[in-house]
Image 1 (cartoon, rainbow, N blue to C red):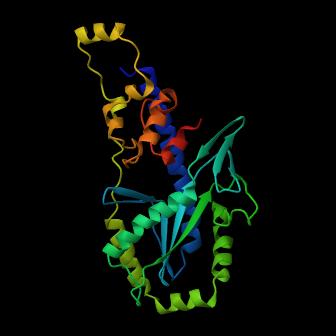
Image 2 (cartoon, rainbow, N blue to C red; image 1 turned 45 degrees about the vertical axis):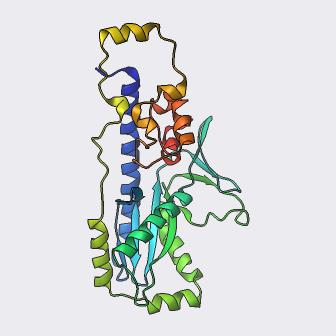
Image 3 (tube, one colour; image 1 turned 90 degrees about the vertical axis):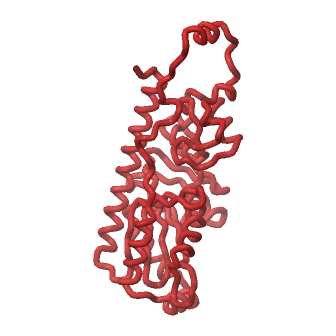
Length: 287
């Protein structure tokens, strides 16, 4: 039988999964509608790559014939998203607010992993140039975004999902002659970029959704051990961490985390259900 903490974890995880999946479906709908007649782009969805132990989860990679790739990161926040002058992101729900990892930095980190994968797969232009990556963060159309002054921190690539067509048009127009010339020199056929898309899809490594963290595994305690435990002094928060926590692995994405990230989770067992997460996935649980 599950205890209270395990039931809470299941409810939280189910809500998070449903919310994330719905957000990606909504974004996919807008992107597919916009690019459905395009002869210059190939749109992919929900690809997860694992390279040298590092994980890149890219919600919507879009390849164009000029050897450019849009990496679209979807965030389905129902609250108010606040971005300050330093590029720090905060989500507000009524009187509750908590900081989250910058989705822009997250996309750049995943992009660096993708660049190594593209090199490995020999996905290059005619001048042997790697694709240029453009990062976009898409939010729900009803999301509220509080932005800083553009001179302090540029949030032009943080948009609502229904704004992508206008954003893309302005983005293309903003590119100078040099960028357009490079794109022309690296221009590949639609069939070629479709082949690239198939190559990337074959590299997809889905996460094992049935793999349970140690926190959810059945606990077997011998009677004698239970008697000793009942009179033992309570352990310090960091000593209550499960064995997997001491290996410093995020329970959501499997990426290695720092000791500071792990300790923060262990010292807040109620918030994180006794498990540890990387900074990106700590934000899912709020404050």
